[in-house]
Image (cartoon, rainbow, N blue to C red; front, side, top):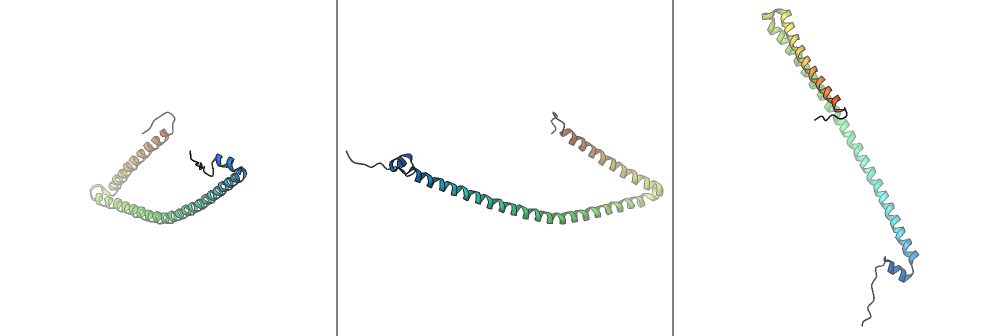
Length: 141
């Protein structure tokens, strides 16, 4: 029979009981765990600060770009409104020889009122769908 030493890992319970250094090994393991947790907390703080700075910069960028979007959208709507006014006046002028001044104006106003009524009816339908989606028990697509 040969004399073979059994190799036991340093952190195992067999090594502690064999060496008698339970208190020393345990203190070293706890200190290492505490150090690791402190490093983890510090890394978490660093990540949180970086993420907050990124989101703040992102919000400022979006806010800056939104001003330009709003300005150009307002300009586009203004020019579209002016085009509709020009169209209205042009249609009145074109219909005046056939219907007279008041007749042409009445026809154009009636057409605009029909268009406005259709738009309001569509808006009311969408509003009703929105309200219905909040009612309990009803499944709305």
